[in-house]
Length: 326
Image 1 (cartoon, rainbow, N blue to C red):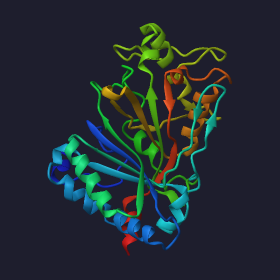
Image 2: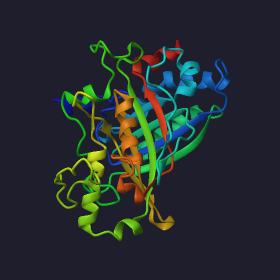
Image 3: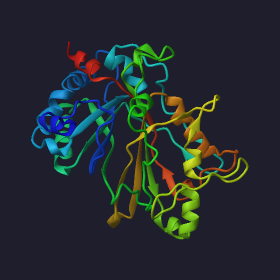
Image 4: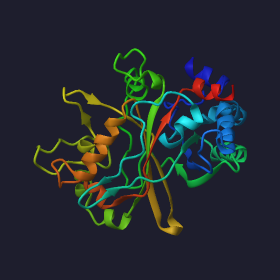
């Protein structure tokens, strides 16, 4: 019944839990003039107010393609663009400098996450959005992602196994109005962290499969979880990216990572896209990866993967965007 209903209408805009798809476009944009009341801000507000209609116009051409679009807004332009109360955890990406590797903070006012099971629909929606935004934004990064085999990254491992399911999904990704500790300004929205990583396949492939599995924390062929290392030993990527709070409660995030690359240009990468109801969860994950736990024992995945970008955004509910046209 749900699948049938989905085929009757497009997926709503700002749905962070849209289905995994075979293609994606990941756009990082900066405003040409971020001052409140500027022409650039006026144009951006108008496009965001019309986002649902623009997306529907393209999505209706093939409902089975599951075209979806979410837009995140950065802290530097949140006030000027939305005029709404600022979500409590929204701030610029905090650079993480480890002894060996760094997670950089890079410019970005808007992040546009387009995905579908048809590359041409992603292309067309991107074209229409950028046509409407012409003169108001600069494209600081444009990455085209694709689903690789059975949801594997270009390192050969299944990616996203730990994503929450069922009732745990909205609890992990959406700021909940029923939570007395939740930020009222962010109810129904989601924090988004985006990072672009490139891989050295030569360095990765110099490792044996057993060494690669120890780095990831899962078997390569059948994706079976390996036992955690002891507190003082080198931890796997799986363990370092698993976050528990002071009460021992584990906190999930939703990963919608996409491989990207060009063999002809020697480019191979993974675009990390993390949606969360609690920004601190991803920030702690990055600290554990880049600084190490214990300190000095950084995530060995970083020895073959370099972070090029880093941005924090907030994905407001569709109703907030629609109201920007009032």
